[in-house]
Length: 457
Image (cartoon, rainbow, N blue to C red; front, side):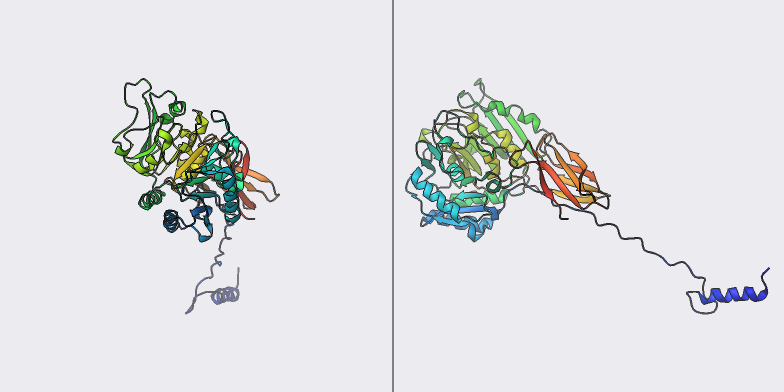
């Protein structure tokens, strides 16, 4: 047994270690040790579709009052950098220009555009085509240069665009071409209304309808094979209803009328009646397959594509010389709607929908982007959460991390069946991971895999 002295000594020692003051104090408790700080989670900025204002060049007919006024309004509305505005000498009194004169014009434009410019807008209405041994639409000639391979032979196959249905967000960087669009307005008031529609369309995620019409015109309704499967494919996508109308037998009407909320309208006729009776949503796209819709201003006896803009559409397309009815020379609705819905601007979506665009003219407000998409990667409940509508259907995507040994290891792979808003998840990497990367279809060749984004490390 302890002696009374030992017990007293122990009690005094305990009192001297107490944390409290006053008589007797308190018994000491072990210090609280904070847990180690968690390892910072790697993050990654994923790419999003859609050209930005800083990537668009604005071409102005120097000394032409209408072109100057349109450009001024557009630059202010879209915030185009002053360095991207290029004034050039063009013969605005003529509907066409010679290929030799155009070569000098294009060389001047290319030399003066900032390197980061990926596409261009034309703010004059004439000339709208380039004439050599054959005719190219001005917008196609600005993209490729005048080259008879893109228009030679008339009723024959022409050179294809590598930009067709691609995943490129930077056509100049990836494909060495700058797709172009002509505003297509014949007055300042019409130009301002069109520009306003384009701006109003941005990120509205509009609810609307698309109409895909097979008409009684057998030579011009040949795109119907692209239309038939689309309504079923898009069922369940909130806000977009596609309607295939087959009037090839002539029992109904060759056109729609008095429709509201029109987002897409594709058909085939020399002249489309009733288009002004419809109400078009900002950002709406409409065109008709015929020979001379892009032959401005007259249409060479057919309905010019500018009538679509006058009716309220935001963009259209047509050919400037006899192309014959190759579907590859006109827009493919399946591609255009898919690219547009996944976040592309109307310029990108339209250009990507035409495989052989050399004889064509694109018109409209190029930066309209109603289905703007921002792809995000965040950490939610201990895992990565990816939200996007930009994924290409039936393509492979993956999220990888780099191990401490320097090798890439898969965290998750993804494959979606159609364009729609996706909520995807992946586990977090181990604490020893040094980088993340996002892989998917290459910008130049979508059948191949490329690194689309990588974190610092």
